[in-house]
Image (cartoon, rainbow, N blue to C red; front, side):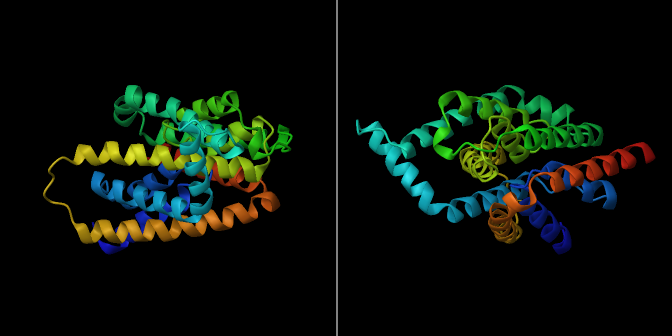
Length: 266
């Protein structure tokens, strides 16, 4: 993998991991347009861990409160809004983790085609727009319950479909439940931390004793993905109320249509 390929793929992963636009749809474009080979499992793990680290550092104060409150509740301490939110995040992770174990290999083998990614990009993009239009956008973070967390968690499991977008489907589900845009986005980011960590650990153990790993490439990919993801999180959080979800819906429709054009022109 040359330097340009490495820089582009790491930046794409970092910028698109937390936006509701589907990172898998974007990562297929260099291969489809430029004929690049797959970046490999090790590089995939590195850039995902870079995105994960960006979320952890950006939200480190809130994550610290959630962890301490959750540990306190485990030791018999009084329940608090932070501990309940932490339990909701844990609960929301379970559906996607189970679905990944059961269906992950099948999806990886049979559903990573341009057609599937293009269709999912368009369909879930329209669903995002509908949720933003119909949702009341009035509920605060403390209104999350085990039922709403499970609902958003089941939506996250749908993100196993390439092109659906993990952040897109979770934000969509939260908006349908009436949560504010910033709340839906932040809860989606919190949910991303355990699921990306679990996915990264699962992929890392698949590497086994692979000896041809370029640690320089992996470090560069990690850092570039970290920087891109951190910038993305900062601007998305600060702009989401002003711009809403419609620009992302329009972008997804254009991207999905472009992928279909590539598919039918081959």
